[in-house]
Length: 124
Image (cartoon, rainbow, N blue to C red; front, top):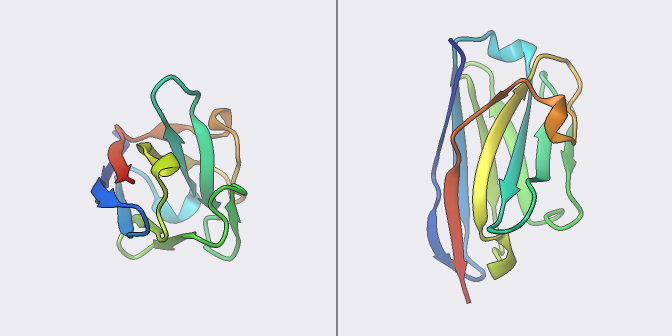
């Protein structure tokens, strides 16, 4: 049974940083591209960042480029999202997702498995 468990969310002031983690189990992690998405109240789920299964390529939404960094540790079956210079508009539930493919997708339907999400709240 595949499980993705996010952690690291919380409340932070604007300009601060958080590091999200997503621990995967029940799959061969190195065979999966990984992505982070977010969903704010009343809005659709949106792409944030993605990384190929080898970690050789990364992709970012324009809204987070230069502030967020996605990375992975295949030995620990974990993907990370380092979030710096946070803004109130980054407030959302953040989800990690796994895609059984070498390349990373930027659409929710590209992904096969999802975590339960972790809340990130940025105060102004």
